[in-house]
Every structure is written in structure tokens, then in C-alpha cells.
Length: 466
Image 1 (cartoon, rainbow, N blue to C red):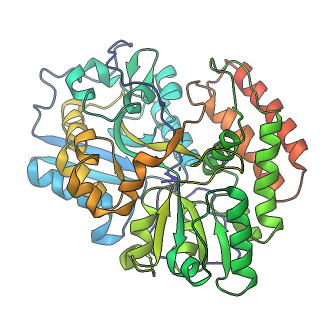
Image 2: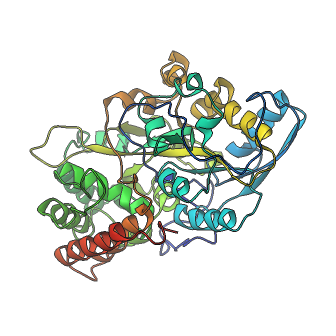
Image 3: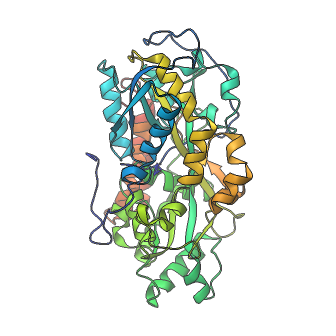
């Protein structure tokens, strides 16, 4: 949250890495977000927002807005958010955008911004948020239903599934900013030296990672996001789906986590640690720790989001590797299943605060961020998957990053974020999976506890996950 993530990012639970690697260089968003795999929607229903109306969407060319966003990639003048703001203000010199840096942990950020808005705060005017937020934020009037202002032609430019994932009860609440999905990154030089092929099964990855560690080729084998936070739900969803399981029924009314598939997923994730394929401290890793460990040359394999390739080879982002050393592939699957495995789909949207008094400028900014200039910056400079079909499929974009050539080869799975109770549902998943990873409970006990916690979450109607 994933980048996230996500895959995510200050007063958050920035747990230590037990000396494995410093959190220097790039601070990357925990991009652990999820989108629907359904078709795009252009629905425009929903309650009228508290924000003032605007006569012509996108016609506002003056004003000031506060944009709250978690760090993406780069630092200082190379900070992606700063680069975007500078480019926007060059085109709209009379609209001033003030950046407020949000927490890098998606759970902390969600709780913080939800509390601010539910308390009536008029800022931030616009905020970047996880793609798993629409149900909760729509159910509690924490975001403007953008489909009341932006026409069907606006939504038609986005890649399939992204608008559906931003929709709750017929209204679209988020404008897609960038997409995420999980990838396997690997050290091409290390695999070539050991005459290893890119693993297509999780079992082979575990064996190869353990071998590379044991023979001294690299310090750590496989690093990923195992901390007790949203990013772990993303990782778990990939193993669970590969094992043939689901977290809930299609109506999100019942949990289906107490299954053989869940037990297989958690058991394997724990075995990555006990076999030596992954370090024990992976139970404290969020995206930045995993990214910096791999980008610093200390791991052979990495599960992370789309930005990881660029971050690994960019010194200003903390990367110490070269393009010739880093490969990218779809995620593996379990033996006996069709390759590739499933990648959790994530990403981040742009939302508007219902209490904002600058709706016209807010809409101008949001529309610009979905335009070619902003999307080219995010894709070609920072390695994010564009949400706009024309940009993500352009030869220039594909040639800019090998990740983009892998995107069409992946299989995607969303998290069960179509319910306002998703935050509590996800918490039930990641806290219990983390406990099993740490060895404080068995996989079977963790699965039973997940089922119990998820059932309680889905039966709750009192707080909607706030």
C-alpha cells in the first residue's frame, strides 16, 4: 500500500528494521491499495456535497488549495509531489497549491484524515487517498461525489476497473491518480552467476532464496511487506488467491477466511522465515524497509509495487543498483497452478474534502493530475503505472521502464474493499497473519482468529470502520 505499499508513510508505526538497513534515501508510499477488477462506471448519483457548486468544471484558473499527500518517491527538489505542483503552477500560475505531507502509513493516514474531515475541517481541500477508501469515505460523507461534477467523458479515459473501484453506491468518489500492482524484482546478476532461472513458483523462489543466502551470494534472500499493517493484507491476498481462497463472499456479508487455502497461505509465508529465505525482521518491514534492503544490494528478491524498479536504480531515491542488475517479472504462484500468480491491485486516488471552500480550484487541480503532463511525470520519471489508457499504452511510456512491459502479463486481484467495514476487516487479517509470521501463534490458530475478527467486522454497522 501497497506504494505501497502505496504499498505507505510518520506518526505511523515506523518500526525499526533491527539493523538490517537504514531508512535513508527515498521515502516511498505504502501503496497498499486495491481497485475493483470490474468495468469502468460513469454513475453520477449520490448526495449533494457540502462544497459550493461551480458553474463550469475546470474553468477556475485562480485561487489557493491545500493538498495533503503522503510521500511518493524522490526527496527535496526531486520529490514527486513538488515536481507535480511546480508543473501545475506553471500552467495555472494563479492557483497556489500548498503541500501538507501526510503520514506514510496508510492506516494512520486514513484515520487522521477521516477524523479531520468528520470534525468539519475545511482543509485539506484535496487529498490523495488509497483506492480502498471509497466505500468508507462515501458511506460517511468524507469525500465529494465527483461524478456530480465531472462528466462521463472524463471517466472514460481511465483504464478498465479503476473507476469501478472508486465507486460506492453509484457515485464516484475518487479520481484515479496512479495504479499499483505487485511484482517480483530480482537480481539478474546473482541469478546468472548461479545459473538460476527466474522462479515461477513460490516453492522455487523459497529454495533459490535460501540457497543464495546459505552460499554467501547475498545477505538476504526474499524481502517483502510483513509488518502488521495494510501492506501485509496485500501480500496475503496474493498467496490466498494463488491457493484458491477468498476473504469474503461476493456480497461482503460473510468472511470465508477459515479455509484450507488460508492455512496454506499463512503456513507458506511463515516457512519463508523459518527456511531462511526471508529474514526474521521481515515481520517489521513495510515498503520502505523492503525497498531499501533490495535497492541497497542486500537482497536477491523483492515483492513490491511498480515504483520499485526506478527506486532501486536511482541514487537520489536511495538505490545502489544498476539497470543491468535489476529484473522484474510477474509474481510466482504455488506449484501446480498456472503461472503467473496473482498481483494485488492497488493505487491511489484524488479526493475532495466536502467542507472545502475552493471546489472550482480543487476540480481544476484534480483534472490536471489526470492529464498527460502529470501522468507522464508519474510514469516516465517516477515509475508509477498511469491510470490513463492512452498514457500507459504509449510507446514512450513503455520504453521508459521495463515494469510497464510486464503489466499486461499479470493477473490481478483486489482486496474486499467494497464494504465500509473494510478497515476492521483488513485489521483482522494483517494482525493475525503477522502474529503467525512472528511465531507467536500457529497458522491454523491465526486463520481461526482471522475468521472471527472478520466476522465481527462485517457484522458491525455502527461505526463503518472509523
